[in-house]
Image 1 (tube, rainbow, N blue to C red):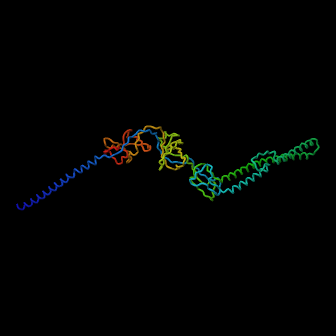
Image 2: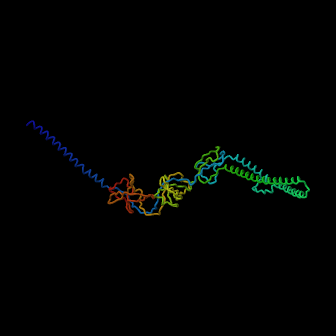
Image 3: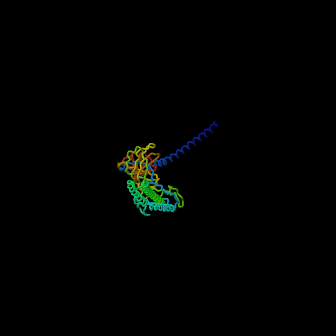
Length: 409
């Protein structure tokens, strides 16, 4: 009995200590619970201030959105028609030029010599035809040339002599040999006359040939000056002063950039709506401005490889601020204005490809999924999920559905 009493006392002591610990812990837990509950209640019930705006009904034209590339209206590679050594280049990269403006020159010395030779050869032929050395008149009366007049005189004398001999022969006053000699002289005179006429005609052909040679020499001299075939700007310069160029070698490349051509590919499903003359709005990367144009050309066929229609629009570029080769986004207006629901672009939240806005109902945020269309300034067209007059939260940030909100005034 004495051995058991101490053990019981120890067990009772441990039990008392355990109960005390549980009481203390329970008291502590009871003291912490009201504060935590109050904090959580404050976090849940505190509303978030938000601004709202009403979705409005506007009128927007129906458009086809496409992408494309700006191209020069005209692009020309300019080079000399003749070979020679470059003596001057009057333009460089980016230089604006007018049609007919001098771009470059070749050394004209050799070409001037050729002109002088051709002029001398022409004067020689003119003198042989009895024409003055200079002058545009090259009409020649064959019968009035010296050699033909001389041959004709000999021919007429031979005919008279034959006639006399014929009369004398008929009266048996001359021998047969004399009569035959008169006939022979007539035949010779006729041949010489015909040869003189043919010689004059041959010289006339030579005259025309020499005139053409002179024109060619003068043209080649003129071709030593390279002029701009179009107005525009220098895209590329490929030659230098002192360089010997073969005929046709590229000297400069010119582009006409007003207006520009916008080349786009319209999907087959939208192709029937595209017409020449339709308005088009163009936007470039890094350029906030909108540029206007019109559809100018349509391909007659759909491209089989990508099922698109090739379309070209003309875009005005009077200041030259737009550049060929730039990537562009464009909207082709295919239908007049029609009703559309518009909301501020700051009201739209996009995540994982889904577009949402938040409305307010009974003091709570309500999430609405939408599908958007075109952007007009700072507003976006809503195609589905929202009606005109409904209010949406502007700049919702990390707002979630069901979160309490309060409207800011």
